[in-house]
Length: 197
Image 1 (cartoon, one colour):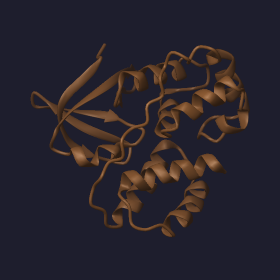
Image 2 (cartoon, rainbow, N blue to C red):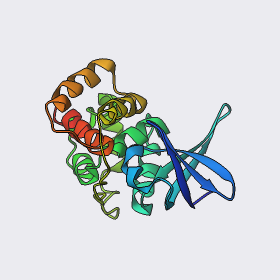
Image 3 (cartoon, rainbow, N blue to C red):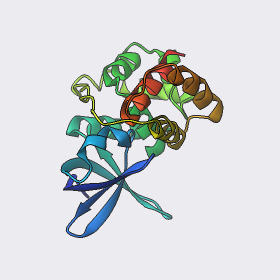
Image 4 (cartoon, rainbow, N blue to C red):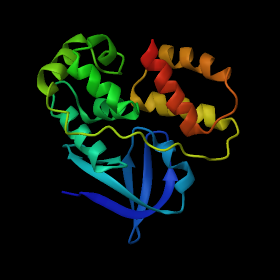
């Protein structure tokens, strides 16, 4: 129904952002909401996909049309719902994701929350050979001032993506060894660490 929303970014939360357009605040679920930290109170263009369920109407947001199209391909696979699709999209290594699907790398795919061996096999079966036309874009790093609620916010975002407390604690230990970063940078690094395990 909606292709994109242009409006003022007014709020950032662990699982979503709020974009105001014509006096209406749209709650948009995002894989890494903190990537928008430098754009608060600025005009943004967010590509969206609406999912209507009996108990909820949810907008899922993406930086680019390519990201949105990759998400749509992911949720077309049996066993991958919008929440799992968003968690997969939160990891910015879209090229790595496409390569894993093309090379039948089940180990890589099962590192995502909610993706077991059976779902990973289904991803490969359904999408192998069909993702070549989707260019993988690396998003630009966001620069924002950080003090250490940033680390806590990034952990809340991991929780919102569906990672377990045990997984989050392991990553938390790694991140506390790093110099202070923005929430976005912490979240990016946390997702990279998750994928290496």
